[in-house]
Image (cartoon, rainbow, N blue to C red):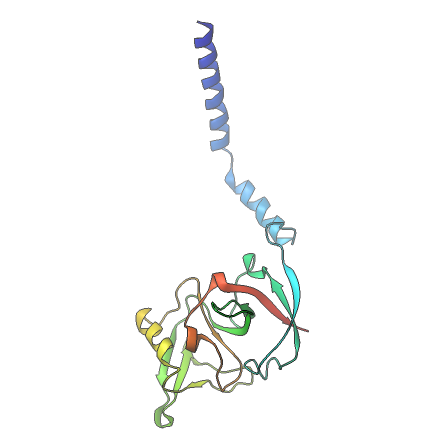
Length: 195
């Protein structure tokens, strides 16, 4: 009989504890967490600064070969990738990160259009001709427009969630989305700050 009373008392106690947990206001926890993150004290998002030296001319004139840059590794674990960000990207098969500019983000419309008599192709993002940091339009040859044309067809001209279009700054072309397609968010390793 004592064991039965103990069982019912323990069960009642468990129900009370579960009821308390279920009826707590979750908004209080979310608000506290958001303000903690906003104040920069989020221990779940450590950012490591590392100095890198630019190799190659693919980001010229924006970044020069031999220029030192600061990579903020882990930055995008807590921050949104924005159009125009210069990023460190981990490309499969490459020993070092590549440095590229984010020119298209999820939800952007994009198209690859024939450039007319020049036999080149232009990239249109959200209705505007895509250009580099100097304002010159990117043009793609017959070979380099194919991957983005396939993505345009397969995704109905919209960049899907978790995908980005990356380009170098040099108009002569580079190892970018024209060669490897959409970039994956999971491979964006950090944000670049010029020194």
